[in-house]
Image (cartoon, rainbow, N blue to C red):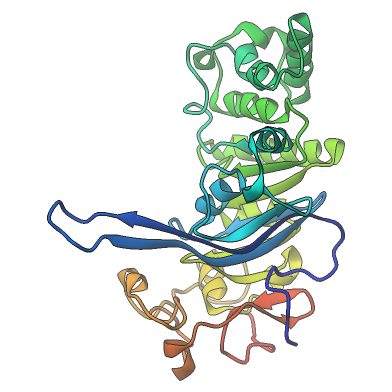
Length: 338
């Protein structure tokens, strides 16, 4: 089944955000006397769509470009090529006032709750700061709003005058979530929001995010390297490898029938994911081989199922099964689960 839409969706409702052919190249000078700088291709033509009210999980190894994509969507970086549409409008064409409105509608939850909070500001100051910057409320209104937000994320009202060092890691992340909610956004980008927390606390924060989504109709882009977390949180999941989306499908479909060899490598590393199946490594070569430049598939050096066309031709993301998009040259429609 061919797919003419590279963003990987099939009429799932109203699109809130669309990323179209996003590329991001960073240039790094090697040495003082070196003539040729290093060009790092962090993103290589990423296209995807987020629909209102859904959670799209973005998963892959460290360095695959997940956080770079989040920074482009937040307008913290500009793409080298491509477009980013929010509500059908290109955010790269926004002026100053339009960007300020965009920043109210899109918020970020950071990975490290301790580093993301100013140790000299109270919880109330941290949560109320967006309200002051955007001139949404003034004076006592801000304090009342902050108190409500603290209760919304499961913290007591009297937490408002406490400093970050007086909270646990999970409580600090709740403050970060309250701050993200302050401006009543439509889209929240959660960049590894539980990776810095104890396992016992992670489930509490994930369940809180789900409850908030239902209560406020939020849309999430959930960035993580944790396959168990993304399975728990996501409606759809996009798998990234070296700046490209190699597979995208509904949560249950992806875990029951992973089609791309890279996705199958990731899943093979999870003990007990498929009962009765052997737990084994199936990578062909050393991980350092993935940095070898090639005109073909970026996974070619490591792929255990590679074929000749993979070396010279980079496959496009196409719909191989209904709602299941894969970038691979293999005839993988009937791929068995490893």
